[in-house]
Length: 139
Image (tube, rainbow, N blue to C red):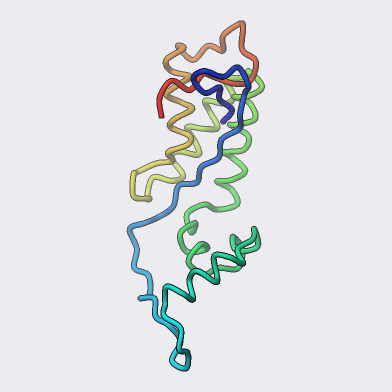
């Protein structure tokens, strides 16, 4: 989404990612032959974090298991149409994306639902003054 935060006139892109939390993960442990505590190991890993972690870290991959290629494609179409003011097409794609995530912890897709809620508050009609962003009225 793209929003304007309270007190600012500058539109700002925001990013979020729903994850499938209701699953079992292996217990974290320090490797057998190390003198480092688990916290120290995790701190070192965090210091070396980069975007490749999204495709290589087994926990991040598992958390995103419901975000299929088709879901991402559908959501991106919905978001693009929403930002571009084509809300009829956006609604169709975002509702479809929400249904694709029906088996996750919240029974749908939070980011799709947030945009759909905003569009519904405007009776599904893109305002004539639409500039591809909305005011963010709460945190």
